[in-house]
Length: 60
Image (cartoon, rainbow, N blue to C red; front, side, top):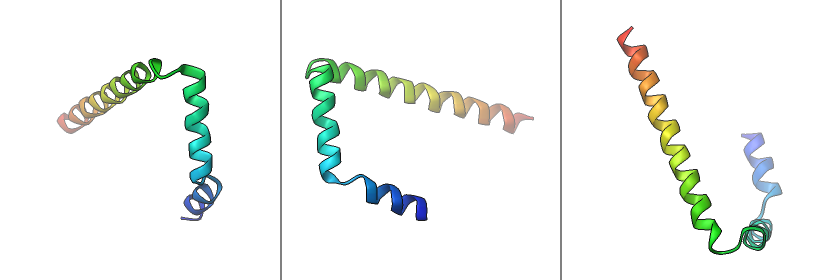
């Protein structure tokens, strides 16, 4: 719990806004949806792979 409190204390709303602005400046508005799609598909593949591992473990 202490680690969460420390993390949330360091990153506030202004820091989040600053990070979003920097990302927009670096990648531009058109590139961000492509990045998010790639991130989403990567997370989906990771979840599918972990479910397959769980099924194999349950069979044993």
